[in-house]
Image (cartoon, rainbow, N blue to C red; front, side, top):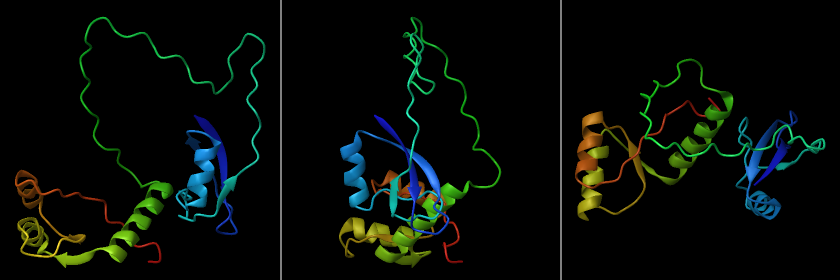
Length: 163
């Protein structure tokens, strides 16, 4: 794995962020395909920023070296209960990704409103053309669709980026 400090040149602000990639060739391939995007603005004009190398002193590991994995436990350890989702404001990077996702869904899928569950069933039975759809469904409707073998997913629906 390789760690890069990156800079978005899509806007005048030149947002900086970091990313991990399999190798430099994988990074270059993803950038050329427009698949590396800025977590702040969603822009895809991304380039590597100047980085200082992490050179360890003799006998000491590098500051950001990945520590060795701890030895496997000999006895099963109890699983701690999951903490509830963090409360508070959504990070700007997460909001930007969700806004971009919303824009893609709205561009490529049909809005079916409150008829979502029934339209998903019609498509599943072959009574309606199979296509991407989005709309509203209650928790119980979504669970019933899953029980019927119909794949559904939910995403947080944030306000659009331009709104």
